[in-house]
Length: 248
Ligand code: ATP
Image 1 (cartoon, rainbow, N blue to C red):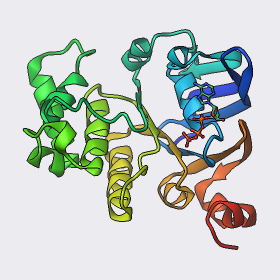
Image 2: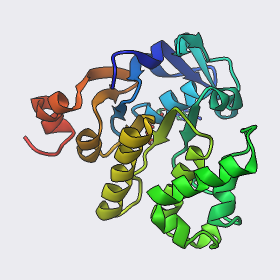
Image 3: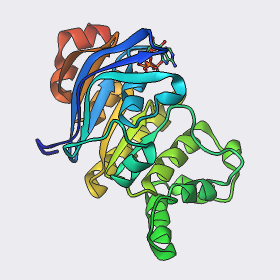
């Protein structure tokens, strides 16, 4: 990763239903080429931060009431999610993995819809996704709703890749998955970062695994960043060990 921030969140406040203050001045930077972990317990504000960035709060009656969100120095907080996709930023949402009634391959193809380039390019990217996720190739004709949770998570990441993103906002990829699959998915995230240069902002409750794969991290508590730094430093920090890594 470089020092240049691709994405910068500056002191944002988010309020739901005009009254509930959930983010109380969150600032963070996602450097180009890095994996940045956004950590914290249930309800700390991780998902809200990601949704604020990709402008997905409106349907939840949420609103950014203070601060700024910049991508490559450009103010993006009033843009449609699709405008952000055009700029290279895409969100993989927690839980809502795939369109259940479409096949895996059809799901992947829906990820290419914002692109103006031809069929050949799209086919090429489909092959690229299958190189990273051989399981998706095996299951490509299967209806997504009948594949496993792990395969659906892979499908969601694969679909995001089809938009040729520069940055992926990945919400809780480990959610509900067996440890071995979590390792597999994080391993692929790392490969995508290293070989394709995709930058990641990764919201995770699983601090342990996230800090092993990320370069840097931010820890949120009740809507505030309480700690941040290099992943290796956070792993060694006594408070992080005690409160987040389950050892003292
Ligand atoms: P999780 O791991 O559960 O997703 P999180 O860190 O992502 O946790 P958020 O989902 O961002 O946390 O939630 C932060 C706080 O905002 C919580 O207290 C939650 O109850 C509240 N919240 C989330 N969505 C809404 C909403 N649509 N309306 C009102 N409050 C909300």
